[in-house]
Amino acid sequence: MPCLKEQVLDLLKKGYPEFVSGEVICRALGVSRTAVWKHIQALRSAGYDIEAVPHAGYRLISVPDRLYPGEITRGLNTSFIGQQVYYYDRLESTNRTARELAGRGVAGGSLVVAEEQAGGRGRMGRSWFSPYGCGLWFSVILYPEVNPLHAPPLTMLAAVAAARALRRTAGVKAGIKWPNDLLVNDKKICGILTELSAEMERVNYLIMGMGLNVNIAAHQFPPEIRETATSVLRETGRRSSRVALLQDLLAELEYWYLRWQREGFAPVLDCWKELSVTLGRPVRVFTMKESWEGWAEDVDTDGSLLLRLPGGEYKKVVSGEVSL
Ligand code: BTN
Image (cartoon, rainbow, N blue to C red; front, side):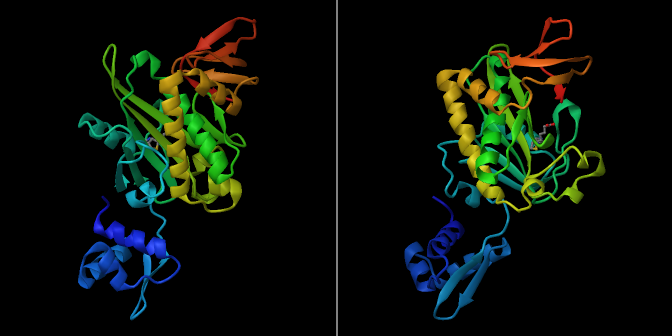
């Protein structure tokens, strides 16, 4: 049951763009006029623009560009992913907070989201640029019942979900660079950092951390990534609704996660290949210690990259970074 403030907001949204009388709100929620006024003031402090006119009532004018839990869950088409939201204005890293919450056993599918990260973390020990209010910086907590050896493909599943949501909701033609970077016109728009806590034969929890550049203008990127990173705004010239994009992404994530549980990795991999911008191209692959040049021939059933080396032999790369 949503709290009274959320219920007042629901009534204003249902009435939009008309006025909803104070009397109607009082009766619907069984509260006094003073209580309604208090909740209207709280909504205004949270950034909702609400007009109040004597004898007419209250009218919602605009909703703030914030990732408030109520905005995310209202109209969210999932059964468990994103149904529980831990929202923060500013965090060190959503992955870090998600690990703490997972250690306390919060519900599977819980979402940790922040408007800004002070220490956003990327793959290979890099940092992740996460400025205030213009991206999607979030982590999903999952408890997959699998052997830890079978968990890595979940990161490719997250890439499939993000690429599909970006294409459908934001209208940008995102492609996947092995294993899970999302590119538009060869520039990175989304990165995924999956972290695992496991014992020999079981996963304790898995954190799927995703960073998606939404309303970041070109000049806002630090010089060192300005030429290699992009955003939805940069690609389309328009600001996009972060809430709508996140809702679609969470629904995609749940669809593919449930499918993976029922049918295994094969359907995810088929879709990953359709969205790939890596396969059938010459690439360079880096690991922490080595690098190889070759032809990105295929991806194996476990998600490894099959690289054809200049001499014709094949190299199976389990983890690493590709440059195109
Ligand atoms: C990459 O290097 O490509 C992965 C970047 C992952 C960034 C996201 S933002 C939300 C979550 N919290 C973090 O600290 N990192 C991930």
